[in-house]
Image (cartoon, rainbow, N blue to C red):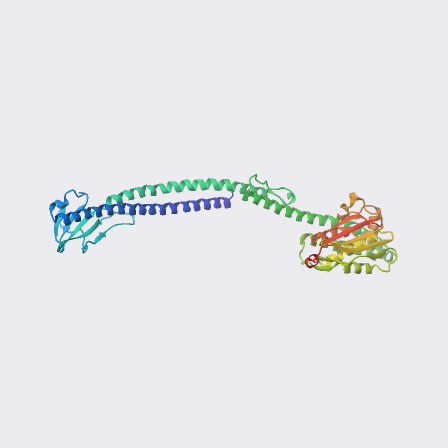
Amino acid sequence: MPTRLRGLRTQLTALTAVVVIIPLVVGVFVLATLLQRSLTGSLTSRVTQQADTVAAAIQHDGVRKSVLVGVDSAMRTVVLDDSGRMLLAAPDDQTGPLSSERPTGQRRIVHGARHWWRPGDIDTPMVVSVGVPVGDAHYIVQVAASQQPQHEAISTDAKILLLGTPVLTALAAALAWWVSGRALTPVDRMRAEVDAIEAGHLDTRVAVPQQDDEIAALAVTLNRMLDRLQSSQTRQQRFVADASHELRSPLATLQAATELAATDPAEEWPVVAPTVRAELERMNALIADLLLLARIEELPGASAPVGVDLDDVAQAEVGRWRGQETVMVRYAGTPSRATALQSSVQRIVRNLVDNGIRHAHETVVVTTSARAGVALLTVDDDGPGIAPADRERVFDRFVRLDESRSRGAGGSGLGLAIVRELARSAGGDVEIGESPLGGARFTLSLPEPQESSSR
């Protein structure tokens, strides 16, 4: 087990020991005090009862030796006159008053009672003094009892409990050490599994325990993190692979053109210059598209969307192609608003229209509408269409289905991939179906603004 986990296990064990030992020690003192109060109350009752018995006998028979017959020999009893002079005592060896208290009338005073337990001996007896009026005379009965026996009994019990406290603490600490070890073992195993995952093998996942607890939740979270790391690595690798693959052809063309021009610059350069310019423009467009895709994938939804008039964007794009002779582009639709970035919507519509024009024979129709809180834009063409089996594949990067979709037909092979990524980053999507014109129909769906959808 790593040092950090061992440290955590030690901390948990130490914390358990502290949490156990403090209540145990406090509990011993509280229990001893409760016993002390209980036994003190019982002793007070017995001493008071004896004092009351002697006082009643004096009131009935007067101050005679017989009033002390039958008293508890474990207690000291004295009878004093009003001046404090001792008249009677039991046992006989008592030489003076038991307390300085002198209650008047029939008052009763308890002196020296210990209600709180603390370690050590008790050298102060409990004394109950009772006033006894008899005619014009006034006497005082004092009864004393030692508190040491009950204190020693409580102290013995407290010592036994205190001696057992370390044993109980050790058992609790051992249990905490064992339980924390079992709890941290899956964490240590997951740490080892994650530590063994290398950059080139991010497809490995942490084993999720069968039980539904925090450890399983941690494993699921780690696997989600690995999913994100693998996805990020895949995007980076795909970017590099796509760029290297697609740049190879224009670079080869540029190399061949420059080598040809180098043989006779004056004669060959005017011939190869248009080719060089076209390939450079193609490379520039390709790199720009790749960087755009990378930004979309890396930071989806990085900017706050706004309400965009989808019909205005569509009409502006159709107007861009007005007057060209090869394909007729027209707009037919109703006002529609979408929640997205203005620049993203413009790029989506442009790519879809460009794609339609590239494959249409004569006509491209752009339509906007709204349905159930969703803004819709469709682009129909009368071209060859797309087979159902290929309608998802065309959104992959650099996919060209046939000769009509070759590099010679224009485009970098990233236009539809950009459309799908931008649409999904805005909370929408794009799908392909059959057009009434006979070709392909691309349908873009984007969420409407809240104020529009609530109307």
